[in-house]
Image 1: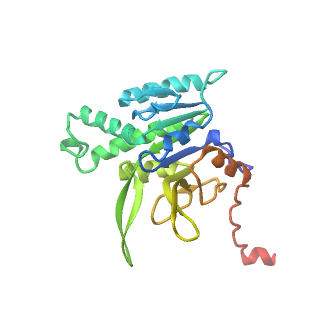
Image 2: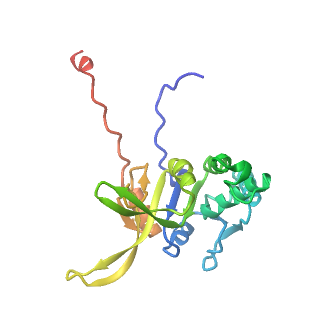
Image 3: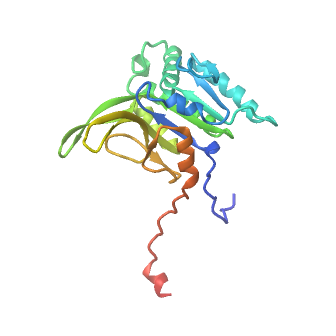
Length: 257
C-alpha cells in the first residue's frame, strides 16, 4: 500500500461523530439526543415514554447484534432512514455483553471460575469494543449515553470526588472514552443573583478535561461550558472554526538552511 501524498481533512459533520454523553438520571441526556436528526434509539432502558421517537427495545446482547445488522442493511440502501443511532444506555448494553460471556462458560459472574483473573473482563471488553467500532463505522452519527457515579480520588492535597461514567471503569477508560470524538458531561449548575441568592438550577454540558469529571472535544469547536440544549449546541458547533494543531518547533538546521 503506497504512503499517502496528502493529509486527510478533519471531519466536521456531526453526522460522522461519535458522541458520549453521561450524567445523573433525569438531567436531560435522552432529551438532548432526541433532538439530533432522524435518530433511532436502541433503548436498553425504558426512558423514552415522554418522547415521540423511533426506538428498538434492546433487552439482550443478541437483540443489539440484530439491531446492528438491520441498521447496516438500511445504511447501505439508496435512502437510509436514520442519520443518528443512539444506544441509551451503553451501561446496560455492556451488562448484556457480560451476561452472554457468563452463560457461555456457565458462570454466575464475569470474574468467577474459568472467567477469573481478568479473562472474563477481557472477553467482554473485546466484544463490546468490536460492536461499538462497527456502529461507529456506519455512515451515520453515533451517540452513547451513560449514567454517572461518584469516585473518590487521592491527590497531593487530599481526597476529592470525581464524577465518572457509571459504566464499568475498564470499559469506560479502555473502550468508550478513547473512541469518542466528544465526551460530554451533563449536570446542573446553581445560578445566583449579584447578592448571592439562589435563582435556579440550569442544565449544562462540560466539554473540556477537568479533575472533577471526564470531558473532551476532539473537534475543538465547542466552548468549555454550554447549556444542555441541542439548538445552542449546534449554534456553538457551527459558529466556531476548528482549532489548528500547534506548530512544531523548526529544527535549527532547517532554520539556518
